[in-house]
Length: 329
Image 1 (spheres, rainbow, N blue to C red):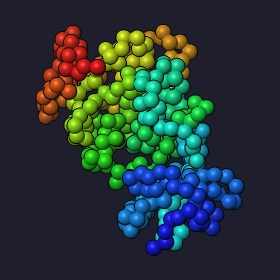
Image 2 (cartoon, rainbow, N blue to C red; image 1 turned 45 degrees about the vertical axis):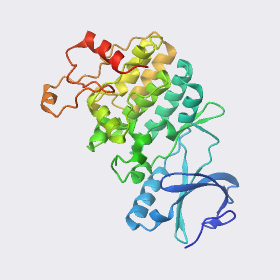
Image 3 (cartoon, rainbow, N blue to C red; image 1 turned 135 degrees about the vertical axis):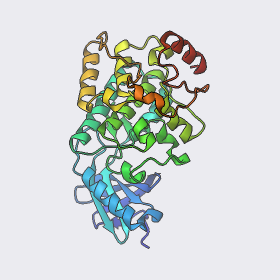
Image 4 (cartoon, helix red, strand yellow; image 1 turned 180 degrees about the vertical axis):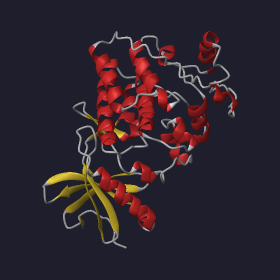
């Protein structure tokens, strides 16, 4: 088996310089594209995945689709290849930190900063959706913040391969499960609106400095995405502008039909808010579904960490008090 080490060339073109990171399924190296004389990032599949022919085929087709995407708010994929049994993708080298690290470093972000990041994130997501690519794993760990304030969404095209095309709620999924849509948590069919839900959760975390749902296991968090409504951002911090809360909660509506229809629609509201922070979008952002069919479905009983959606549907004033008590900031 051919080994990856500093100084080797892949595809007679990409020189591997040094290892800069490792993910669940691939190692990442800083490299040099000798043909275009530029530095790149090279992702090489780990050994256990290289031996799975089905996985390799999916990796190549998904990465190839992503290689057609070029947008300033996406970590662009330049090339996909195989050399002596090593499967790799060549990407733009981004010098920055993840949005997750950025939030942890700064706590909640200023509204101006939130809007700048959210607009760039939605621009990248929208460009991918226009090309028919759903990310499936939008989370701040997959969003890069550069020194100049520009933002790039990473891992388009391979998130589906990493999850095997569905959400497996293992311990490894804990990082992702805080951001997955209810339909992903159920293992149902997903479309582009699932990415918008996840973008809403990222927005929620940026403006409040915390996650909408917490739990000890991936499954407990996933169940809350399906059955619970989080504290509204303004219950956590009344200084959050109403319009910013409205955008966040519309994106995070449990029913995809109540969310934004597209990333462009969400982007339009973000731009409106940037122009006029006092705008009133007049959305019903409680997140409650009106279809009574839901009542017969299995309910998760309220716990200290989660208040059941249906159990509190008709107790609006009481709900805010209950949730405030059961979910302290």
